[in-house]
Length: 144
Image 1 (cartoon, rainbow, N blue to C red):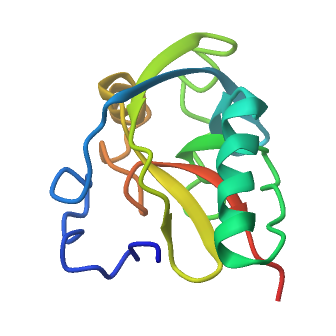
Image 2: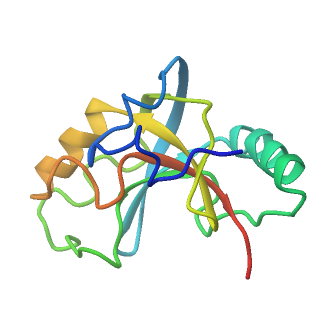
């Protein structure tokens, strides 16, 4: 029903180009929250895809902690809050491209994303240009 992260079309650690077309454009606002940096996406985008996930799985997904978002820096993996450029882009509007192909690992549901600006932000913070999990917009998860 949904392609999974382990799908043979999704082997790249940095993008999903082999699996999807990034034909949709979106925008979000960068937000620094304690040791997390997320791109907040308008809730209507997440609600639309949550509706599809609920319909296709027959179960109700929960919204993520940061609502619909793209994680730029996950505090649980790296803490760069002391970096001199931490906070530099607070409330900056960022455009990105995304795919409508809903991906899942069985618990979390997301859409693949591409954004060169977010890669640059990570590099400025001394991180690799791609996060631990390939760029994605988190739309929801299933409670156990």
